[in-house]
Length: 143
Image (cartoon, rainbow, N blue to C red; front, side, top):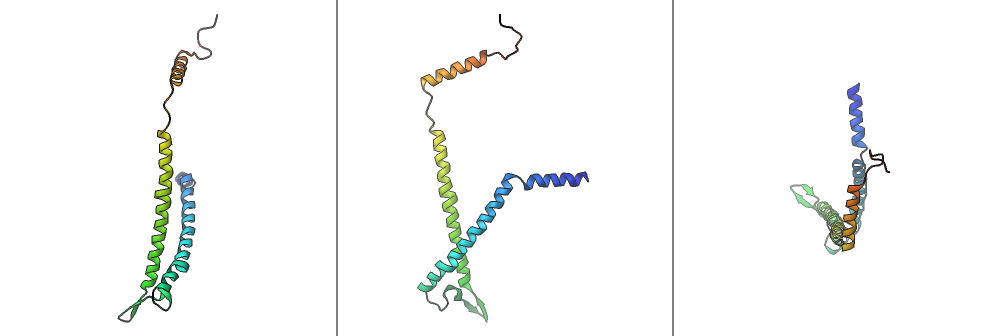
């Protein structure tokens, strides 16, 4: 019984950590983003490509018959375009946008101005006062 309780406690600690919840939110948002990109590819980009290239039913009708079997390479091309759009969006967001934010924060941290002479003297005075300070209730009594 104790082992089951311990196992439940470990699972509860794992499942309700902030990082696991953040990951779950990320997966849900990623799935929704994937649906948007799929719709963009299926309903806008690939039909436009189908208009520009010959074919009766656009890219969905692009097939390659081999020995009586039909290979729908048009659908595969649609999935490739879908992947490329998702990869480009992730690249722009993660590498470029978040990278830019991280670099600007690092530059701000590096760009902290040096202490002025007054600030250095005040820091030295503060440190000396900390060294000389006695806790309340020390063995010496004021006279």
